Length: 251
Image 1: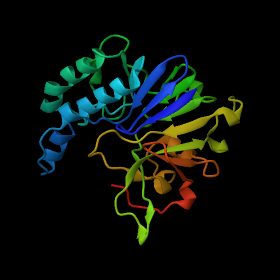
Image 2: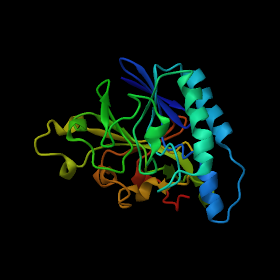
Image 3: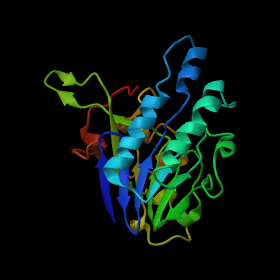
């Protein structure tokens, strides 16, 4: 298995038996959600779609796997999403087969999907790798594998010459699984790894990696093994462990 970081996403290409392009947290329709809070932003869904298509063209995957929160608005589906999602998903399908691990924002997403595209909400194994959005407890069958998940929007703040950088940057967090989180019947412990993928949406904000384990945002955030955790930028640059990085506020 090989992992390739696609900086223009952020996105992740997983090479095993197949080439799987992984993108998390598109949050299509976020502009209508912002409008309800008094923030008026022109829809950038087309530009976001084109960024995904550019990642597909760059990596030539066999499968596009969207790790949940494809849509943004909850509990309803907004007019913007009804208008935009069908064409966006068709544009993806025209290039590559599509599957979606549903997220907590994806209520009703099934109406936009074709048979076989929707994965179980507690995750699925594809080519010996576990995938899920991350807001639910994973299927026990995912333990013993690398588990790749979204939902947490990890970001990192880097030190500059005067202290902490003011702008958080999307980041990946790779970690072992804390022993307390491993199901008793699952062995060996050492095979289970977690890879938290940053949000693709440029408006989605994030949680600083140094605060991720204590955030309680998802069941697996509490399972980060701080002894083995490593942080990578969107281009794959290794920047250290969470303990060595400057804590930020995210956002």
